[in-house]
Image (cartoon, rainbow, N blue to C red):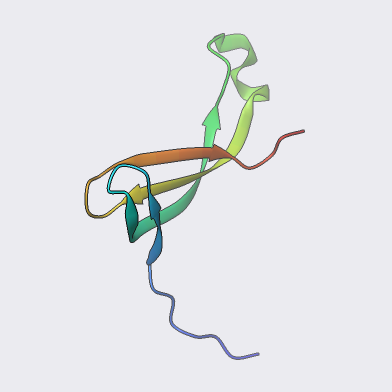
Length: 65
């Protein structure tokens, strides 16, 4: 299976710019609990998208279980 080069900037709609703009997209594991004793059990994957024009960052939880 061949691989192709990946462009790190994806075009997505931006609510601040009110148009489609290039975005840097990544996945982050974020801790949802503010209680230190529960932090290890409250880590969830989030899709983080940052507009490369205005800098607006959007985080969307990927696991809605």
